[in-house]
Length: 276
Ligand code: 7PM
Image (cartoon, rainbow, N blue to C red; front, side):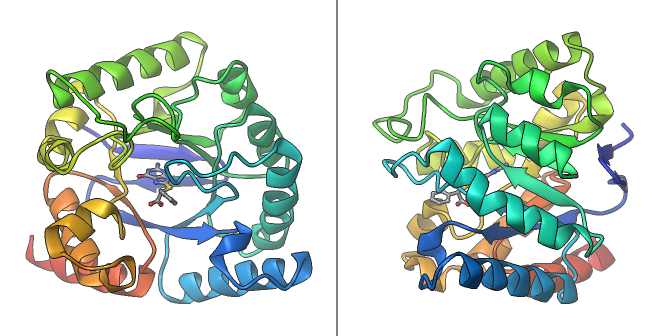
């Protein structure tokens, strides 16, 4: 199976190696807030640092999807995200926008975003239409219910089968709308309505997911509670655990890893690919 992902101005050949998506949070709680100007400066500096460290694409997120976190109003999300897209566009790195709001998708695509990363799998009314007529990449993630309720005693009869079935139905709806498969990658959504056991089963099933849907898999394990549960470490001490998670995902067939710790992940993948 050939693994390629069309991402706006860029195209990724994923046959031989995995690529690193660096997380850029532009939520005001991700730094000590000194106002909008300071937060834009902070985001640009962080992005430049990730580029120096060898990041392959930058994932810009303006809404925290933490379970129970307050929903960010549309206008506020646009105020956070749009200046960052404009500021980073000239850096010539693929820009992904982490949003489930169709209006943000539309604005981001107009501003030249290369990828839309939707934790909601483009289920919002108008989401598919918002991205259909562009050539941006699309990350389609599985989430159980919604961020407010997803971690309330998540249950599956067959977690792998159900996640694959969900992703298949979303891919089918998007391709039926005329979207090219080359634009789509899939993501089991680690931590989004999953217990530790569910997450582990899904890491082990990445190869099956890729083969059954014939699409590249993105894995986001970085600093998540799964890493905390396995190591007993708080979030600021999860770098080594997250690296092991990223390598395990790649060993199982993931081709995009979404991470906070770009320098460490880039090094780990260089060694991994040389020895794999
Ligand atoms: C609070 C809770 C803050 C959870 C942030 C998060 C993914 C994603 C996120 C993922 C894709 C985090 C998450 N996770 N997009 N966005 N895949 N495609 O830990 O796993 O980064 S937000």
